[in-house]
Length: 297
Image 1 (cartoon, one colour):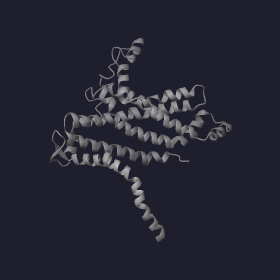
Image 2: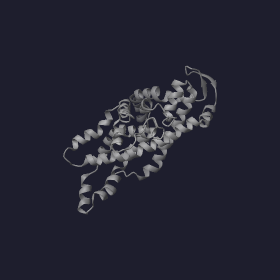
Image 3: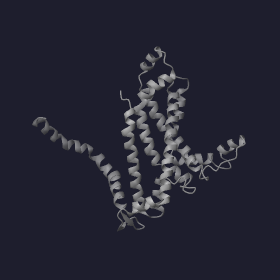
Image 4: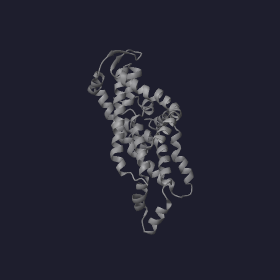
């Protein structure tokens, strides 16, 4: 690179920094500072106000990994991710493919399928609490029609995590549907027309055209879905409050309990850092192994 070009870039550098300064300030205040503060507090015992009073080293981390409650919440979190991410992607993809077909009334179904995007986690939790109500809930009433005994969906530890997972799947369908539908509509139509001339059926087109061309969108949706699943909180707090018997006590809810109910801010900070590295690990693994199967045009 010539000295003239290098000098020109140096002159433009302060201008670039000024353009980025508002974003850097926001990230520093709302992302970087809280993250480093959490890391700092994770090495201390704290008072009821959350102020550090005694340096505890890595003892907070040792104690949480020796805690049966934390290990149970870790197991519940991983199960919750498995219960929600895979069904959400499959159902969203099915609805997106259906809505992408040139059928009468497809506009109505696009609006209907994406409507959950406008529903908050609190509203969704209340709706599904009524549906899962053991006495007047629609789900148990339908089971009664077929002679099946009602289930304590949010009070039975065998069903509570499943019930919250169903609520979460319903909540996330709208976002995933919109993203996948946008990806489907970006696939060139002439690819399908050429395959029809060659005699390819719907399943062959779906396997050999739709999935490869949609793979970048699917990869994005899967990464975001995994992160969102690990961070789920609202529906847990309203529907089960981590119960029964810790069956739905996900790591995020455990952090909330320790930090704002039990005032163990140091332990909560250590759990938050563990959750951060778990999400980071899952994301890196997806980029390392999942991105290999992504077909970029």
